Amino acid sequence: MLDCSKVDPVLHDRWAQGECPLIDGIHYADGTVILFECRALRGHATTEMSLRPLAVSSLDSALTLNPHLWWASLTTLAEIESPTSQVAAVCGEGSSGGDGFVALLCGAERRLGWVAFFQSSNPFVAIAFEDGDAPAVVARSSYGHVWIFPVERPETVLIR
Image (tube, rainbow, N blue to C red):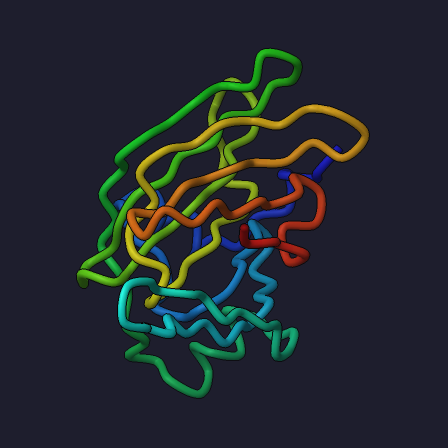
């Protein structure tokens, strides 16, 4: 199971205030960040998503280079508890119209396990768990895209 015991105090303090770093990627509880490039490709009638991982970094590194790092204020639009384990998931929107986030919470205390934040995803409006060999958090954006985040390796996210 995902280890939610290693904690970056800055990330957890800001999460408790309803914020996450304004950085596209997966932010783990321990401060590790998988940086992503996320783009909304708008066509005549549809919007497709382009998503690709770029690098592994850390919140500490970002704060060292930019002590005035911007933080997105988050609003939860949906949440769910897993019927088979002690995890919950939440999703919603950030400070700007295109921002969206999905987060996994651990234990009865609902400690942050990871949060996925993207500035071009649009808000995530619905959430569910998909159980099986590789449990996943499944979130639907207001664009109608379905994002599948494996609980143990959310950086391998798929978009349908």
